[in-house]
Length: 357
Image 1 (cartoon, rainbow, N blue to C red):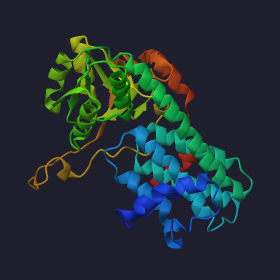
Image 2: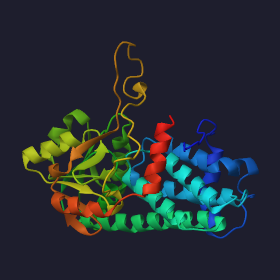
Image 3: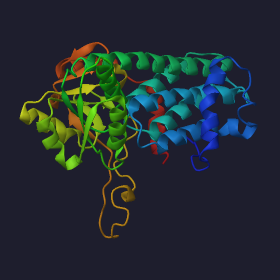
């Protein structure tokens, strides 16, 4: 079963704004979305929204998760316009959308676990009318819990940012940003050392946000990351996925973690347990190559320009993981992640989609 979602028709601008308000209509119990979308729009809303997620190369996993939850609200809105013939047909729609969502942003553990929760909940229904409701509720519940847990993780991490701390961070983690903001709100004077985070330069966005919040900010080149670690008191970074032995995060994470370990500086991962996943086996493979123009727009044709976003780093490189439960050592995290396994139905559907390509 291939996840057949057409991203090519996605228009910029106005439709994205209109899509953003559909989940509010659905969750408020409205019977129709005619005032928000035309009939044709409502049939394509979920695929266009997944296309938006696929095209996003800036937002972090915690932010993408909330948009992933909205996909199931959009499916529910579509269901109200064209009823599924049976519960099994409705379940297949949930599974197809879930596969497409994971193929849009492979490697993000929260999306995989959200999709798994939606599929498992939908699969328990015997009536077609209940399937999309259950999938939407499961997805929204998972996302809401993650938001609360994310805030708690940021609160625990903010305690590490003491008066006068110099903190290096890499890429743009919304959880790390929240930890900085909590420290600043507590009246502490903080210096953030921010890598530019090539190729998309999201470090510049983070630096701008932090300086507006009142932090002292130094932006450094990625090549100066080891020097930045030497000048810092500690390192805080987010994560897209944490498994039993590895962490998936922005390229450059490994070098920073190694530099911190060599220099005797503590290096922490800050994320809630929605990022924990027992195994990534069977999930769509992360895209290892991106548009070469992101790194070198006018590169000569015979030069192979490798543009990647993510890499895996051994969990053992980090001092600890700061989650909603507090601080956990790498060994403790390795045991914790085993509890978080994915739906077999979803994994089988992903395998069928991959085989059909």
